[in-house]
Structure formats: structure tokens, C-alpha cells
Length: 333
Ligand code: BV8
Image: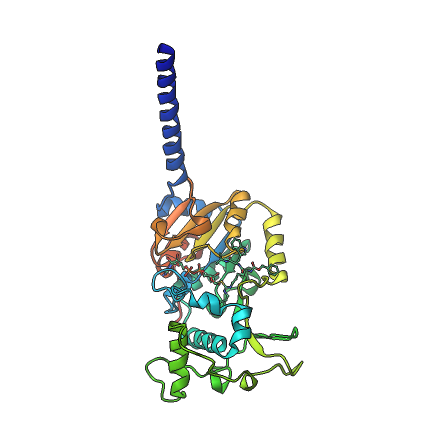
């Protein structure tokens, strides 16, 4: 008995130990700080910093996110649109979807979050921004190009679906007359059925959408036969080799002090994998997200002691938490 008890006692101690250790571990594991002054100490002593950005960074510019608050992809329909298979099945529909996002992105303006990262790049040569966004807003905030890595391409680059031709930075809106998407309110100038169908198609998969005969869609001026397509990385497609190489080169150079995980659910790979890579190089993690811990934080969810979590709008939080390095952000109106 005694033995048993001793066992029970030990067991209890073990249990309590484990409970203690797990709670201690949990406490240690999930105790990110949101103390800005503590973050400022870490920031000012950090030499090498990386940022991983997602749709939440552009939310304050009026662009929908994919899954988070007001998620544009909530119906998952968008995921099925962002694939080479969807383009093969109905290139007109996929083009209408991207024409809609080009139009919205051109109407939008970079926000204080984008400009704060631009300033940090200018002040800290060993800072790089990895963005999953294809909206061109970091570029329009004049983020130093060599410190900006476009993981998933840009809706303003145009590629050929068949040959290797690529045209960078095409801002024609619409890219082709058949792809005209005016703002929802005012669609006088666009063939009504186009907009209605486009929006319907996007919202309701049961609407037959083959709106545009592929022969009428823009074709490649080089190989003449290939359809032109948006220069983004679709699901199932590889990320740009040169960009991945540049990032790996930067990561290899030295330890990393801090990774900023900004407005992303960190659920799309291999982009989400950079959180773990930075941690392996010694980085502390600072999450800036509207949803916070109760939201989907994917690869950035297991925060530890010494990590940070700032819940709220990236456009408001970034200028604040980066102030010791970038100073007061002055945005030209
Ligand atoms: C590939 C371009 C292989 C197009 C995009 C490992 C495990 C599991 C799956 C995989 C794996 N490896 C590969 C896969 C498959 C797949 C994948 O990851 N699937 C997921 C869904 C599980 N990955 C791929 O297919 C990749 N390719 O693996 O190729 C290969 C290799 C060699 C050779 C051939 C093939 C390609 C992935 C890229 C796909 N393209 N975009 C387009 O945009 O149309 S992904 C797209 O979705 C975005 O770029 C982004 O990456 C993602 C959306 O995520 P977020 O940006 O995080 O947006 P989200 O809405 O989810 O979250 C917003 C967050 O912001 C929320 O948390 C919200 O709370 C917050 N927020 C909202 N407002 C604010 C805010 N925060 C702050 N302030 C605010 N105001």
C-alpha cells in the first residue's frame, strides 16, 4: 500500500509535476508578451530581422483577406480559382477573378503598415520582407526592391501559360476589354452580363460561367498559341526559384534576431515554413494579427516566452512598434 501510496504519491507528484511542467511548459509556451516597451528593447538590439506578410497587411487598404475577417476566400471558391486546373477548365472565369483583384488593387493605396516596413528597410540593411501578397502595395510604398521578396508573384505581371515569356508590371485596367470590372456600384461602362456573371460566378459555383470564348482571350505575342495568364503562383505550382534562392542565401548568412509575422494565417506552404526556419536561427517571433491567439495562426501559433503578440490592425500597430527605429512615420497624402 505504502508502496502503492508511495507510488500514488509519486504518481501524484509525477502527475502534478507533469501538470506543473505542462502548465509551466504551456505557460512558457503560450505566454507571448504584448508589452510594446519590452518589444522596443528587442527591436533596438536586433540586427537581422525578417518579416512574413499576408493579406491582413493590405486589409486596411480595403483589400479583402482570404480567410480571416471579411475573408474573400471564405467560400473556398477562390482556392479552386487559383489553380492551373481552373485556368484550363475556364480561363475566362479565372481571368475575371484576377481582373477583379487587379482593379481593386489599383483602386487601393498602400497603408501605414506598408510604409513602416519600407522605412525599416531603409534604416536596417539586414531586414527583408517576404510577402505572400500579389497586390503590388508594398512595391507602391517604395519598399526597397532588393529587400522585398515576392513569394507568390504579382497580379500585375503577365505570363504565358505555354512558353516562358513574362511581362512585368502591366497596370492596364482592364488588361483586356472583355475583362472590364468596374466598381460594383457603377457598372455603366461594362457589359452588364460580364460583371453580373463574374460576381455571380465568384459567389455561386452553380452558375455556369463560361462567359468568354478562350479564343477571344489575350494570347502570347511570342509563341502566338499560349494564353496569357496572371503572373501569380497558383496552388500546386512552384515558387520562383531565384526568390527562394535569395531568401535561403540571406538566412544562411547569420543568426536571425526577430521575425515579424504580419496579417497571415501562416497556413500556406512553403511560405509558412519560414517561421520555423527563423526560429531555428534563433529568432524571436512577433505576431501582428487582427484575430490574435483565438484566430487561425497556423505555423505562428506556438508562441513561447520571449515572443510577442500584438492583436489589432497592422496599419496601426507597425508604425507604433517600429517607432524606435523608423521614427514618426510621415505618409505623404
Ligand atoms: C507548391 C497567389 C509544389 C495566388 C497563393 C505542406 C503542407 C500542406 C500543404 C502543402 C504543403 N506544401 C504544399 C502544399 C500545398 C499548398 C498549400 O500550402 N496548401 C494549403 C492550403 C494547405 N501549397 C502550394 O500549392 C504551393 N506550391 O507546394 O508547389 C511544387 C513544388 C515544386 C514543383 C512544383 C510544385 C503554392 C502556394 C501558393 C498559392 N498562391 N497566392 C492568389 O493570390 O490568387 S496563396 C494565397 O493564399 C496568398 O498568397 C496567401 O499565401 C494565402 C492566404 O493566406 P493569408 O495571406 O495569410 O490570408 P488569410 O486570409 O488566410 O489570413 C489573413 C490574416 O490576417 C488572418 O489571420 C486575419 O486575422 C488577419 N487580419 C485581417 N485583417 C487584418 C489582419 N491582421 C492585421 N491587420 C488587419 N487589418
